Image (tube, rainbow, N blue to C red; front, side, top):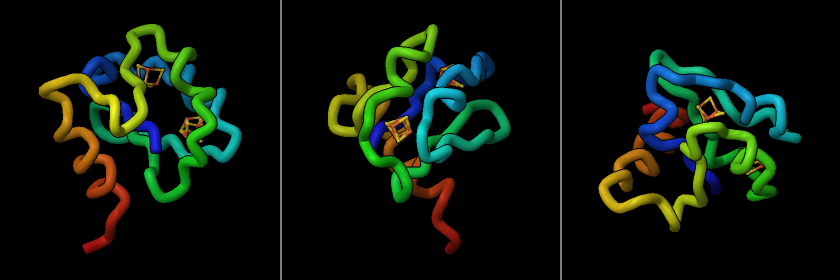
Length: 78
Ligand code: SF4
Ligand code: F3S
């Protein structure tokens, strides 16, 4: 799935939400989160983000790997 990393924090432009065909992008306290269980990997959200916060999970920037686990955790009820 695609993942939203740190550039989104306190920016929350939300252009990504409008592009997602399955509405799997949700708002958190300081950033938005893509639900990895619902994302269909279409890639439509990626170019919509003005701060390039969105990437495929296996291509996240070095140092931002934690956001992959963070996204899964956000949607997992423990
Ligand atoms: Fe939505 Fe597609 Fe982005 Fe996944 S890749 S969050 S399905 S727009
Ligand atoms: Fe955040 Fe970019 Fe979406 S700043 S809300 S990931 S358009």
